[in-house]
View 1 (tube, rainbow, N blue to C red):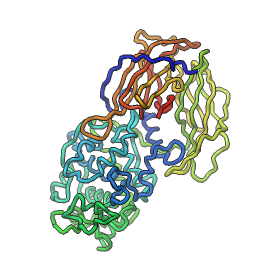
View 2: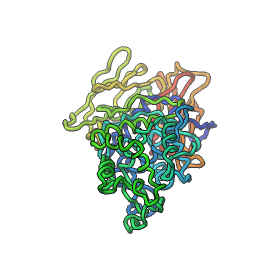
View 3: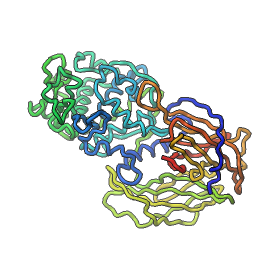
View 4: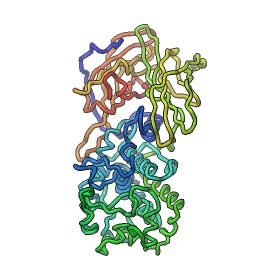
Amino acid sequence: MHFLLSISFFLPLFVTLVGANTNGIDERDIMEEMEHIMVDNGGTNSDGFVAAITPCSNYVGFASNATIRGEQTSAQWVRIVFHDFVTANLAAGTGGLDASVAFESNRAENAGLFINDTIQFMAPTISAYLSMADNLALGIVVSVTTCGGSDTGIPLRAGRIDATEAGPAGVPEPTTDLNTALAQFAAAGFNQSDTIGVTACGHSLGRIHYFNFPTIVDESFVTDTNLDGGEGFDTIPDVFDSSVVHEYLNSTGQLGGPLVTAPNVTDRSDLRLYISDKNATMQAISEEAAFQKTCYSLFERMINTVPSTVTLSDPVTHLTWKAVDVALDINSTGSVSISGLIRHLYTTETPPSTVSYTTGSSTGNSTVQLSTTVNGTGTSLYGNTTYWAFNSSINSPGTTTLNFETVSYPVNDEIFVLPTQSSVNTTDKSFVISAAALTSLASSDGMAAILYVPTTISGTVSKQVQNVTMVMTKYATAGDYTLYSGSVTAATAASVVVKVVMGSASSRTVKSKLFVGGI
């Protein structure tokens, strides 16, 4: 029974703009969301993130005639990280990977489609769990993995906070002199060899386009299937490997690319870098293993260069077993149940036909339950996935964990959102939220719901999370629990995360996609 469907009144709300990973979001939830996007690439529970760069030559930008533009999304995802990171100032503790580049697409140093293409594509993945800057870090990691690199090469962390305005200018351009370019990289923490290496690594993927640089790329590259006139840095621009180094050193193929061979000497920025140490760095990374190892290290340093006020999580690793979309429910007599999915990520082994689980409390584990229902399957860069659905009653109050295989997933049955008794109207973006709390927790402050709403802001196609705090009203009791409800309209109905609070107590967060009508 849905207790709240007849409630239609709207309650006061208060709005503040906040960083995407603040305001009581658990680090575990942040890391597990990044793991989800990294791992769930196709089939059940996929959000299509990695599909954008599969195959690596793919382009999912928003320009007209997309299939014949000669653009490459995987290369755009590498380039945008470079442009966001390089204006960092380590001494001042500012800049780095903070998504300030989202406000900078009109600068000459950022010529091309790559900023708005990337930001617009990744905007739906912004939530209370993941900032745009986290998305950018994820983008470069999966680009390298998809295009030929190692799936374990670049440790990925979460917790970046998005800038609310443009950062300083200073991205090196083709005409930038050597000393100025090296000084800019030095401010961001990269020495001469690092600068040469990261430039070669970045130019292993993609092209430079006549449309943006007509003095560098010849107009002959513009064709009916290459409208922007893209010329590759090497002969296989959709493969992440050392070809760009080999072709430069051996004077074969693309000779290192247009920024080595440009007609005007002033445009040969890559050549100036490469020869600045008499090609020593290029020689050192010419072997494939050395190239990959160096690039992984440099890319990791780029994505971990963040403002000094930001603390990143531990590395996010793909999980063999994982709980997904865990939710609690309660009926009119006060009986509490737990439901969700158990995901198994595997490579060569055959997944089991059933999965057992228990719930735990201070007095011990519950009776073993079996999930025999396969809810779906999927594909991943790291293997394949199988999902089992589960739904069973729990001993409440007092349940604290959901346990299966080697996983102990935290449960809070003292105060919780009721997704099956909440709803979202995607047309008018209205939310009806139901929650339960132990009657013994009752506070004079009452209960409030916090909605973390990704909201469009001025000056960019990106979004940032807006907190909407809604007062809730008691409407019933059920056993040991009191039930609360409220309604509100938000700026969007997509990618919203909700939690409830009462005094010092707060629930675990729930994705609004689990609400009736949720997306």
